Length: 208
Ligand SMILES: N[C@@H](CCC(=O)N[C@@H](CS)C(=O)NCC(=O)O)C(=O)O
Image 1 (spheres, rainbow, N blue to C red):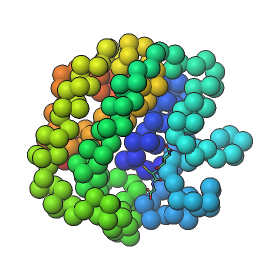
Image 2: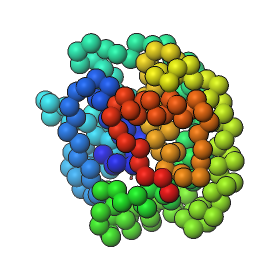
Image 3: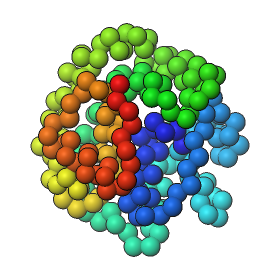
Image 4: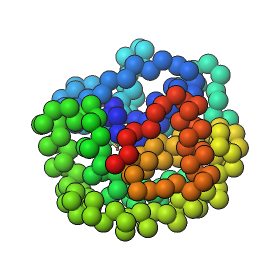
């Protein structure tokens, strides 16, 4: 996994909710060899089950973990939540991608790993200085979505009232967005974020 990766956080969140121990291994950003050695390609997250069979899809991993013992993702799903999650991913990237390398995360622990990240993300998102300089613009673009989520949240302990797949869709994205210091979550979003992070026992990442 990478510490900053929201897909990885889906799996970590699920294990925490189920109180199942997950042995976490952070790879350096330039360590494609480890990923290729495990599954034949560069991809994150990878879950190695106890029988050493790897899994490659984060939602399959969540489903697998939920199937161990008594399932807990029993609440209803709402299509608006899945649609919300899809629409915010491209809007939050320009805010989060240039900030992750400033947080002292283990996947960037060497100069080569940091360069590797900066190069590939600059190709995808553009110059980081420019992205930082346009913070206000990107926040303004994202705020209506956060207001929409504020209206959709039913309970600070579960977006749809009872824990469901939609919580797995939403919380990791909020954890990513929370690295943006200038971004203020609306009240119910903040309440949901804080209570869910508390429940799973994770501190938010630093905000810059
Ligand atoms: N559908 C996969 C998508 C996995 C995926 O796209 N992972 C990204 C990380 S966010 C990745 O491996 N990117 C390659 C890289 O970081 O170089 C899942 O949900 O697990």
